[in-house]
Image 1 (tube, rainbow, N blue to C red):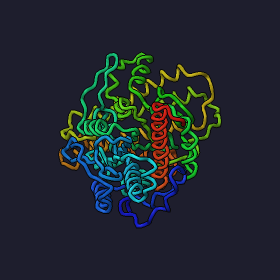
Image 2: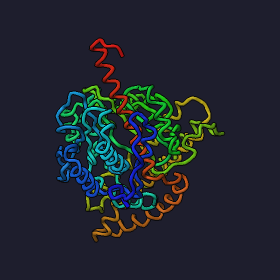
Image 3: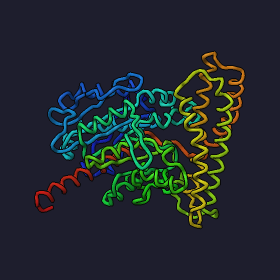
Image 4: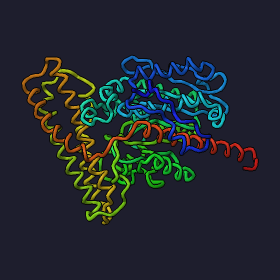
Length: 484
């Protein structure tokens, strides 16, 4: 049963404002919807509520697929700017992160079924179910069995950095310049320009650990509810190593956005040629011109009790980072050796090959950066959660990049174009990859039910959107000189 065809109904909708309880309203489902199935579900909802939902085409994917936005609101809904401000929700910005597909459909359904919810927020909701259908289709091999870690790794796909919608917005800073905007990114830019939203969320998810958040400015009023929402469904926060060392920490598991200017300065401070490493900017940075409040909830497919255990270990924090750096370096050397040997014999320029040609060298660079960071860390004990994040991160990257390299080599085998050298590389990689799979299984924890993940994302985005609504309303009162 998929998110689009679930036969069970969600619990009764709580009153607006009780965002913790909203997290428990996502219907039962055991799979993620494929791209076509997701669009069918949105169109079924549109047909059932023609007075509330409008479908619009906002662009075309790299491979020629139409990109759609579904606008939900009372009265004639459109992409035009509305006086009360609007809300933009974008799924599939990273095609290996499908939790947002379930979240987006549940949000659209809840808005259609609850006049109270629509009325509470005011303004229209512009929901993009999947902004990168080309990439999402390359992950559909694991969408139906998301708890199967082996299937996940062997059907995994994440685009090369310059093919990711979220990180190909225009960027100019110091010696860096990026303007190779993807068609999908351009579509999202046009949507943001048309709606000038008060709130934007791009729907992401991580792989293992706990829940964490990003926002483009501090919002102390939100931190309590953002901790309560996952706790209400038995999920821990991720309080270990941050995803980006340069991201500001606002509260436990709440970070400022990953900003490319900060990334540039951070890399420059480590003696790296930052202009050569930093590419495009993000949707958060692009939306800043409209004063938009940007928010992200990261939820993991698998969770582990160590994810929020802040007990000190007997290991030093810097040593834990060094162990991770060595493991990443070893993985980079092995995968790089396979890729270098096979490269002259490869004839199929698949997305998997483009991705590993980008990611495998970056793995070695990450190992070097982590070693340099370890040398600058204060001398203290590592926490259990920090050690878990370091270990889980190694497992994740080996399974992801190794899996995509397997897919690239297997494309040659299946097509009948594999030379003996490519077949030898394929066998060698498979032997090591099976070891990595076995090691990753217990290390990354237990699978989490999809309604729990989508529910946390749903409740948190409503709380954040409500914060944006209240902020705008208070700002309008201040301009008018009215009492609060």
